[in-house]
Every structure is written in C-alpha cells, then in structure tokens.
Image (cartoon, rainbow, N blue to C red; front, side, top):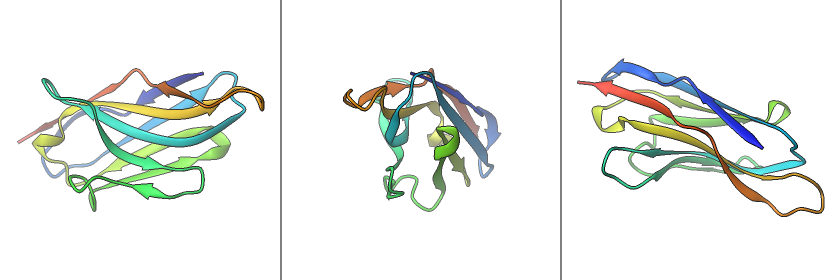
Length: 120
C-alpha cells in the first residue's frame, strides 16, 4: 500500500491550502485516515482524523480552521486548511490504516510528506 500526498506549498498567513492524499496498491479495506505534521525540532502530531464511519477528530490548535474529508471510492483523504498561521508551518504526512485482504490485520501506512510553509 502506498500513500501519495500532494498540495503543499508556500502561502501567506491567513491564506488557504488543500492537501490531498491517495492510497494505492493491494487494498481490501481502509479504516481510519488522517493527517499529521512535524515541525523542525518537534514531534509529529495529529492534525486531523476521520474514521471509516465519518467521525472527526481535531486538536484545539486547528479546530475551526482545518477540515478533513475522504472519498472512499478513491481511497483518498483531503485536508482543507484555512486561516493559516506561521505556526502551521511543517511537513504534513497522510496516514491510513489499511488491510490488504479479508484475512489480514490492519496496518499503519504513511505518505511521503508534503511541506507547508506559512509566511508572516
């Protein structure tokens, strides 16, 4: 299973970006999908999570500004980021829990990361 993320870039504070991530390969089922980020010198942190049932989870730092969505037919997850702040600058990684067959357990897969830079 491979995850390909795209959509990062440079944006001014207050601007918006939309990240996309598509899963490909031998996929039987995907449960949770999410976005994480890692700023220089900091640990990777959860940005947004969406379950297979559509439940959402955001940390307070992005709540009201970021929106996660998924397209199950495309095995894709998206992150709409509005009102961006310089502290949102980080490498953003998509994540998915996927099973490759009905007999296999779910494993965690990561995308390659896409850089988001927010200038003040």
